[in-house]
Image (cartoon, helix red, strand yellow):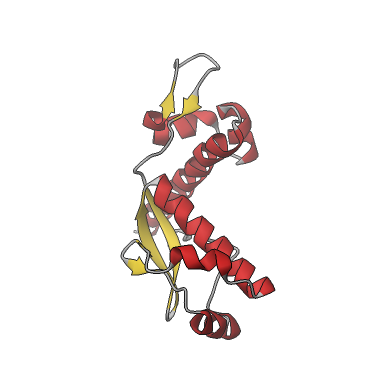
Length: 158
């Protein structure tokens, strides 16, 4: 059923774009329309998937996102074997993973390990975050770290 797989993949991409719209609204204070335009998705699609994450009048302009959510996100978490797709629950955990990935990137670019210290012993999605500098260096040398992308792509329909 190739057609069904393609439909699920498209739905997943739309859902991820809707999540990006909500995140952009939280981060920059943009309106739903402006954030949707920047993410190339119709505001009605955002309302369809994430309407419960929006507060305010339904038809007026003063719509704003909730402070946090418990929505499911497929994200990439670095492990000892490379990056693994993991289901993350909530915007706070997703933000924490983003801060961790930024700290890893800073360490790999500059050698500064200070920002990694606050992640020692923490886990996200059931995976303990790697803070061992030798392990991170080895993963980077092997090309097993993906720092430019933290959201897992939907499965292809091939």
